[in-house]
Image 1 (cartoon, helix red, strand yellow):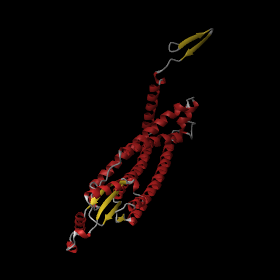
Image 2 (tube, one colour; image 1 turned 180 degrees about the vertical axis):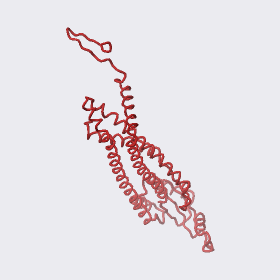
Image 3 (tube, helix red, strand yellow; image 1 turned 180 degrees about the horizontal axis):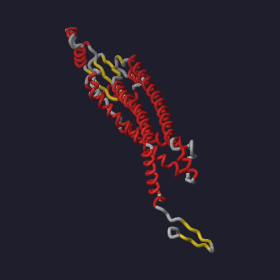
Image 4 (cartoon, helix red, strand yellow; image 1 turned 120 degrees about the vertical axis):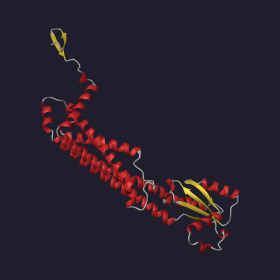
Amino acid sequence: MSKWKKKTSGTARIYRRPTLESDVFGGRVGFFLTRAISNIRQNVFVNAVTIGTITLALLIVSLFLLIFVNLESAVENWSERVQVTVYFDKELTGQEQSSFREKISALSGVLRVNYVTRDEALKRFKVRLRGQETLLEGVRSEILPTSFEIALNSTHRETDSVENIVTKLKQIQGITEVQYGEEWVRRFNSFLNFMRLLGALLGGFLVIAVIFIVSNTIKLTIYSRRDELEVMSLVGATRFFISAPFLLEGLIQGLAGSLLSLALLYGIYEAFLQNAGSFITFDPAASGLSFLPVEYISGLLLSGVLLGFVGSLTSLKRFINV
């Protein structure tokens, strides 16, 4: 009885088991973690299949994200071409330029305003007609109008917002004409909305498919040890004691799978940058092709951990009530 504490209450004697190191929180976590790692070592093949499935599933999702992020960046750059140009039938004085600039800049959605003189307009024509300069022989800058080129904020590049700004510009006295490439803006916004819808549909489908595949793969892992779970239940182990190592095992599998998928994705990204010149006509590095931002990487790591945890949790419910 030296290992037990004795407490006497009247004639009754109550023996209490001393507190073990594994009973405290840190000790229990260490025990469960050790048990989870031991389970992985004992079932290397099944766990390798599970981690491989998570890796492949997250690699597909991360590839889609990489493409979508760079498409969004390209679309954002293209959207900067959405601008409004106002023309004047005369060269503006410095005071008139300042006055019109203030009125235009005061409109909601205007990002910046650039004044183009007649001489600058003629220079631009010559650049665009490089190799055919003879077409501009005898053309003088006086026949060209002066203008303000108005760049818009990214939140005001939709068709309705652009038309609203154009309406307000036409109300400013002194502006001769307003142009904004109405058809181009409408087509661009239709393309942008289509890309966002396609991205949402494909992204949602991939997420559902990944959850389904990973959950069923982890079920195979749990199913291969169903006898162990039943024996532990019969000998009186609590539900938490039984499930904790398996849940930690799922977390480890998910983290390993997400790390591997990111490593493979980065390898694919670097290989594409190094070899893209042999099968495409532009330099992807010079065009601004970038890897996933930090927030997306963090999200993929967290997603992998959650996939492993939720997959283990749902799979355990077939054998025990967790």
